[in-house]
Image (cartoon, rainbow, N blue to C red; front, side, top):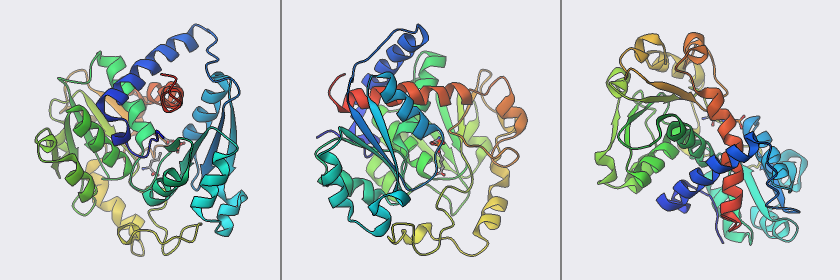
Length: 323
Ligand code: CP
Ligand code: NVA
């Protein structure tokens, strides 16, 4: 069974074929050309955390393919009353064709995939956000015509987005710089998995100005992610990983450590002439990115958000062996 737990499930060929399919679906959508490739197929969407883009792009996407989505906020299902993930996986597998899940621990996605006889898609965990990084890659490739021979920088928190970006850079051999404050580096296991040879092109540092020097794309994200400040238990009653449990006043402390990492005009001035700026959204203007930058000419954030739709459709088609 094919799943999308992390980008490693797709590999380089899988990622590129999803990007090609997404480009072609975008053209069809733009031309108002019907593409009912998945008539009658049903996607279940489990959400332990809020969402605008992921929920709506998956739901709109499967509808545009002729299928249907069922929104399953876990608080409204027996998951909230501790029905085991493995039972939920086995039951849903008998009703529907795919599961998308947004949750806290990556282990929950892995367990869902293990017990499911239908494809499971990671719609964001504390550790990874593969669907978003596919849309980021699509946006960069669409703009520059290629993913290689350009520098890409990540500035800010070493969070789920940064981890998935490391996965992508390692798989595709991209030139990737990451600047994070000390204490907020990407997950060490993610770096270990990337391997020494991939890490020759992936440079991890503290200095944001050094990271963006001459690059073509700068990517950032919020300084405090969903679930970062939860102490003890999440809504499933599962323990959150120790390193995700922040101290009291963590949010304020974190924000002061991140102030030098704001994506603003001064930072853009160090980048290449034709630099573009990406942000997965939602953004906190005045924190990780200024209003001027997000509204400015370099900003591709709404193209990037649009591309979520085309990429989700391509992911679904890929996992159902239709692409
Ligand atoms: N970028 C992203 O995943 O947005 P949502 O949280 O709105 O789904
Ligand atoms: N890092 C953010 C991404 C939101 C789409 C979070 O996990 O909250």
